[in-house]
Length: 375
Image 1 (cartoon, rainbow, N blue to C red):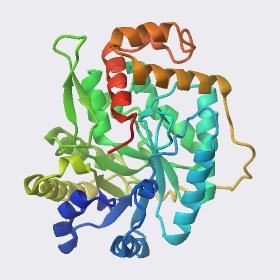
Image 2: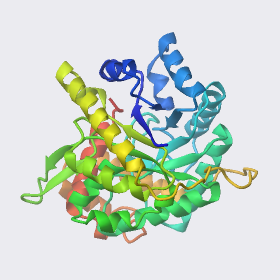
Image 3: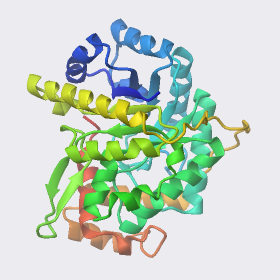
């Protein structure tokens, strides 16, 4: 059975939009970003009761935002994040826990945006270590969401295989975000059939759909960049991708609709969110009937290993700090490019020499938008 879910956090606009769906018992599961409650001093009892209701039915999944999986240096904030996860997992039954791919820019742990990393043996070792620590904290299946942002087409093509290698030691799962793929289809002019064939679809346990926005490049005339901003309705093209993808994923259990509060400020926008959910649910129910034979993978590791010291890489840390500073402070694409070629990232596995200009431009926009925290 594939369950239709919403990403549900303690947010007035989102909860207002979701009320009719809850009242009609259409929401079959909840995804909760459990590490975002730091913003609230007091969590209302009714929200806890909502989470507990889905938890008791084993239909609550957790989605992390701030762990910064690939940070080169292990931080006290990461350990605190794991401690929080362990505590939350003791109070709620999570069917699985996931995190974003990448590392967080920004000096403050709750500021910045997830940015990609080079696919190397060093980053692979760090990612595998962090996933093991996540599993030890929550003792349920753990997984990663594919990233919307990439610097180059070569990176796009390698992403699925790298995810597979990362997840293998913990028998982890993938959240396949179809709007993230939609961004890459347009930003790199790649076909869906080609990109989807590069993912280990037997690992896909959850699918995300959402909306986003277009941004005109200031350095390439006529180039429009698709951004994963989660602030608009779901494009019809993403619904089409959902129809194509569900039958390809034998382990699929959840399809989740995401939208930020900033896109749900009016009654009309909330109504469109409800319509998006209804359309998603129709596709889910029809698509589930066409799936490949169901894969019975429980996404739990075959054996539990003892954790040693966290894996770190001092050179990666230096490069990440320098990259974050460049992206967050550069006054223009040209200035960022100049600084990068004078930095510790030049002529390394980061391959900055091959970054697409419009994607570096986008990275600057992302980092500078979120350097004061998510909203």
